[in-house]
Every structure is written in structure tokens, then in C-alpha cells.
Amino acid sequence: MCIALQKAEAELAYELQAAKTKQRIKEEQMQILVVERSQEIAVQEQEIQRRERELEATVRRPAEAEKYKYDYSSTAVLIYVISHCYYCEFCKCSAS
Image 1 (cartoon, one colour):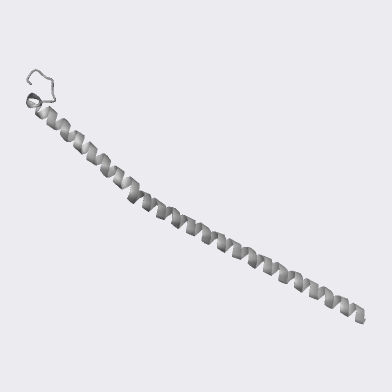
Image 2 (cartoon, one colour):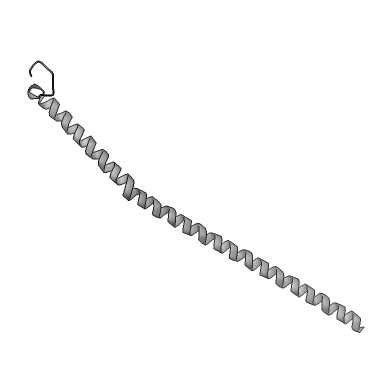
């Protein structure tokens, strides 16, 4: 075999190996990006769950408790007025 031919084959083999290596590096970089993005998504989902729990504790439960308090109070007043209608100062019926 001619030396020039051997040299050309060696250069092509080197270029092919370099291209394969570059391709593997790109694939690994893409895999890293995929993993990083997956981790970002997981962190965002955890943050959403944390905010949901915080909202539940700071807004929803207190609002439900307040609503229950007012519902209970208004129901109690209504029961009182109905049951004490004849003696109630608030009622404008003929028994007052």
C-alpha cells in the first residue's frame, strides 16, 4: 500500500472517530438537559404543592371557619327569634 493512501485512510479514520465522539458528547449534553429540565419540573411541582398547602392553611380553612361561625350565629339568632317571638323586642308582632 502506498504511504499517501495509508495516511489518507488514517486521517479519515481519525475524522470519523472525532465525529462519533462529537456526536456522543452532544447526546450526553442533551441527556443532561433532559435531566435538568425534569428536575426543574419536579421542583416546580413541589412548590405548587407547598403553595397549595399554604393556601389551604392560611386562606381556605380560616374562611371556612369564619363562614361556619357566621352560619352558626345566624342560625342561632333565627332559632332564638322564632322560639321567643312572643317575648322578643326585635319582633314587631302583636304580642310585643
